[in-house]
Image (cartoon, rainbow, N blue to C red; front, side):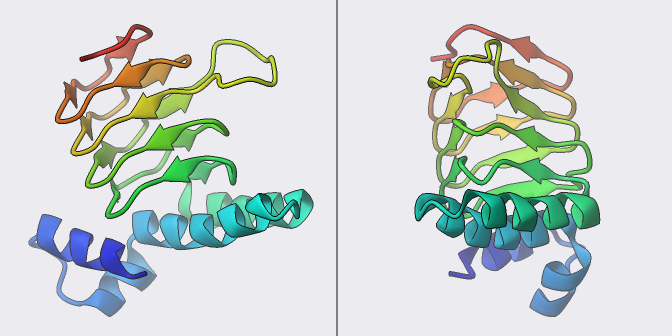
Length: 151
């Protein structure tokens, strides 16, 4: 369950301890709260799920919808201003920098957010929009706006 702490420790040479990472880094805290909110969302407790997600957003500056599916060992570096939409899917071992949006282009109740493969790096301020696919090992540059598949 705490693989994400190891991922941060491996990623960030400035991290001195797991306690420092968990309590003082916004990304791991947002992911911890997301696991709780996602579990609540999965069993139909939508209000409680959104409440937990809102507490996480208020304390970390990272907004992750409880419906989003997030793989193992995601690193959200710095993280303030990140938005991950309801139908977004993120694979394993990805890195997301601050200000990234995984957003939708429509308001219909369908798959409307991106699917991100494994080992993807998404640079600061990138906006990935719509029900598109970003393939494994892709690198999305800072401030890119992506609305077509990246293979």
